[in-house]
Every structure is written in structure tokens, then in C-alpha cells.
Length: 243
Image (tube, rainbow, N blue to C red; front, side, top):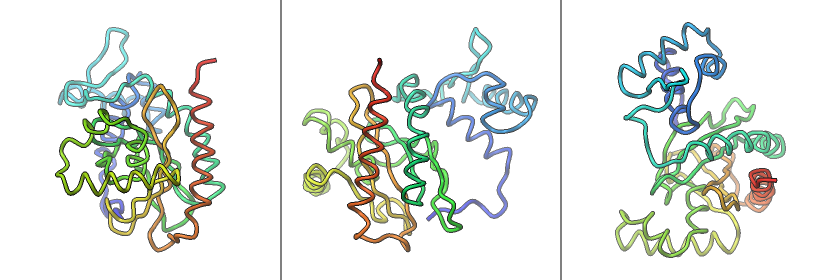
């Protein structure tokens, strides 16, 4: 499990968080960036100016800041921003029910990108994953989304896997479809186990997950965790549907 550096550099962390927000959520004003980071507007402006200088951001005609050439990727920004807004209240209820950290993520090519996290209150806990990217075929939420894809979409997402790994994953995805959730037991990070469920939405390929220190993980909890996540995923899908 990754821990924050002992001598963390606050300004670097703030710049990285801001860059991740621009990439996955879309343009922000200086005031919105300041609110997101809980810093003064002058600090947010300096951070944005440095991101512009290094091509991580660019200033738009309306004076907001958007992702620059370095950050432009495959994730559609407007649906992701809406997904994060809709998902966070449901993630908080998941955390209240289960007592572990909950995440929302989107499929981006062959990866999943975390776009929102609600941390639990345990001293030993999985921290904020927002902005992180993991291989979809290893992450629990990634596997949950892959299990919903048709043959052509799945082949495109798994193009880099060798034949042995692809066959193994296909077998695992059949299990995911049968029981409704996927598990990542220390496949991406030692000491971390996660359970993921796809969001049944036609507008975006997304998933919710619980991330748990492996020391607190028990297979006996899987059915309950899967059910809590599935209910939350259904609520997110409902709230994403235009009225």
C-alpha cells in the first residue's frame, strides 16, 4: 500500500491534484481551483500559471483554464465531471455502510482513471486515489467494466495482453459476470485489496470500488460489499439519466 511521502512537498502535490482535475473534469476558473485545493486565489493562480508554462494547462477565451497538450487524453471531460458530481454522495453512503474507502473511476483505453474518492476514518486506510491510472485488467473496477463490454470493445481494450494473460482474464470476467462484482487482491499494490462493480449506464463506462487494506479483507465480506456497491452503482446510473 502506498503512503504519503514523509517529507511531502505541498506545492507539488497541489499542482498535481490541479492537473488531474483539469484532465478528468474539464476547465476550472481560478476561484474554482482555489476552492478545490482550499488555498488562496493568488496561490491557485500561480499554480495554474506554472501548469500553463509547462503545457499541462492552457488559458481559454473565457479566462478559465483547461487541460493543455500534455494532459489531453481519451476520457471525455463533460461526462466525467457529471459522473464525479453524481457519484460522490453515493460514495459517502457506501463509506458509512461499509467503513472503507470508496472510489469512482472511468475506463480510458486499456486503463481506468480514478476520478473521485471518499476516504474512511480508519487510521490504517487506503487514501485518495483521484487522478491515478491503473491497468483495467488488474483493477477491480476495470475488470467490472471490461466484463460489460462486447467482443470488439473488449479486444480493443486488451490488445496489449499476451494470449495466456488474455485467456486467464476471459475466465475471470466470466466469474465477474456471474457474481456481479470483481476483485483485485494485491494485483496492483501490495497490501491493498479492492472490490469493484460497474455502473450500468449507457452514457459512460465507469465503476465504483471499495479499497481495503488487505489486513482487514475477508472473503466472507464480499457478498455484502458487492451488494452495497451494486446498489450505489444503480443509484449513480439513475442519477446520470437525463430527466
